[in-house]
Image 1 (cartoon, rainbow, N blue to C red):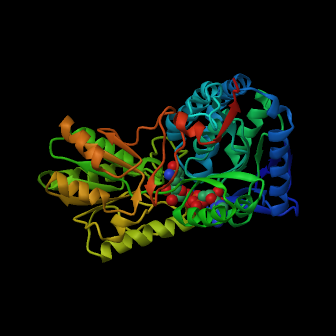
Image 2: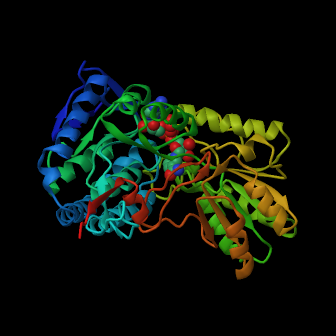
Length: 484
Ligand code: NAD
C-alpha cells in the first residue's frame, strides 16, 4: 500500500476525526494500493464551518468578481501544467486508459476554468421598470449573490472533470465548497485543492472530505449551513438527496444517469455513424452518463450496421490500460462487473440476439467484453436500464415517427444523437426528442460554454455554460422609494 490520502480542510491535510480509513482498490489487480481518511459527521462539520467562515467573514468574502476571475485563470494554468498527472490519477483509480482523460476530460476541465474566469465578472443584475409604490416613483434593481456554501458530490467515472464543472461555476459566483469525491477516486480532487492553494485561493474556500456516500454525503446533505447540493451520480442516491434537500429547502442540482438513444437513419453517413456509435458505447468502458447505449437503427440498415458494430466491438483491445495499444481497461469495481454481467445475461434470457461479447468470467481484473445485442425490443431491461458498461442494444425502426416515439419511451432524458444526411429531418427530430442535449451527427459534444443536464430521471438543473454559473446565485431585488 503506497497512497495515504487525507481530507483537505481549511488548507490543511488531516486525518478523519476518529482516524478511521478505507482502502483504495486497483480494478486491474483487485489489490488495495492505498487508503484514504473515512470522513465522519464531525469532519463535515469542520469543513462546512471553514467554508462558511470564508463566505461570510474571510478574505474570500472581500473579493470582487474580477479578482475571483484572476484566481480561476491561475488555477486553469496550474491544472494545465499538471494535466498529465491529473489524467493519470483519474485513469489509474478506475482502470481507464489515460489517453481518454488526457484528450477529453482535462482539456474540458481547463476550458471550464478559463470560461468561468470570465463569468466571475459578468454576473450582473438588472434595473426593472415598475408601476411605483402607492403613487410614488421607485427604482428597482437586482443583484446576483452567491447562493452560499455548496456541497459538491462527485461520482467516479470522470472525477476531475465533473469536480471542475461544479467548482468553476460556484467559485465564479462567489460560493465556497465542501467537495465529497467518490470513494473510488479521491485523488484528483485532493490535488486540485492543492493547486487552488498554490493559485492563491484563501484556505477554507475549497475543502475536500473523503469517504462514503451514506456517511460524508449524507452529513453534507443534512447540514443546515449547506445552502446547495450539487450532485452527480445515480438516480437512487439522487432521489434520497432530493428528499433530504426538500425537507430543508436546500437548492439542488442533480446530474443523474441516462439511457441515451443514438438514432441512425438510412440517409446518414454509414462510417460517421458507426464511429460515433462505437465511441458512445465504448468510451470509458461505457461508464459515461451520456453513453449512447440505445442504438435505434432504420430497418434497411439494421443488419449491416449491427454487423459493423459487432466487428468494431471485436476489434477493441481489452486489457491492462497501462500496456501500449490497449484501448479498454476493466470496469471500475466489482459491483459494476457483476451488474454489467447480470444485464448481459438478462439480455440473452429475454431473447435479444448477441452479436459480440457476452457474459465475462471473473479472472484477475474486472474486465468486461464489449457487447452488442441486436433485435432487441424497447421494453427489455437492456433497453430500459442504465447498465454503465460497454453494452450496446440495437432496436430497429421503420419511420421517423417511430424513431422519435422509441427515443422518448424512456424514463431517462439526458442526451440523444441523430445521425442523418437530411438537415430538415435532423432539426425536426432534435426538437421532438425529450433530452437535455442533442448531438446532430456527433455524439456528446461537450463544451465549456454549453449547459449540461437532463430531464425526467436524468436530473434537475444545468451545470456548465453561463447558466451553470447563474445557478449558484440568488437573485435579490432592491427597491428604493424616489419621492419628488
Ligand atoms: P453513486 O450515486 O453511487 O455515487 C455518486 C456520489 O454520491 C459518490 O460520491 C457517492 O459516495 C455519493 N453518494 C452515494 N449515496 C449517497 C447518499 N445517499 N447521499 C449523499 N451522497 C451519496 O453513483 P456512481 O456509481 O459514483 O456514478 C455512477 C452514476 O453517476 C451513473 O448513474 C451515471 O449515469 C451518473 N453520472 C451522471 C453524470 C451526468 O452528468 N448526468 C455524469 C457522470 C455520472
